[in-house]
Length: 138
Image (cartoon, rainbow, N blue to C red; front, top):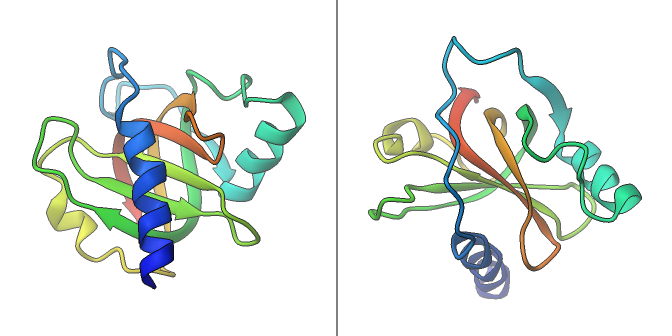
């Protein structure tokens, strides 16, 4: 990842990190079935509704290509960024602490599926935030 793209990704991730929310529970067998979507479908939803309100608060399984992982030893945990294929739009997946081993195999370009609860669009408008994430498949 070149320096400019890395800097842009960190700006998007840090904007999402500043959002103060109560935080959903991590994905478990007790949660309802996840709504399966692609990163591109979320992008279209955000554009058509001006903010993605129909997916906010929903438990999603999002599939897309890894753009990068930002490790954070703090309480927010690590962040996996999935990128839309045709433009600068990301799904930022916040994992609870202790998931670094699973995220280690997530290299740029790898298609993965992640489950988490959608918290809405970040402050930049270029990312959707998922909290309480778990990696379903690389």
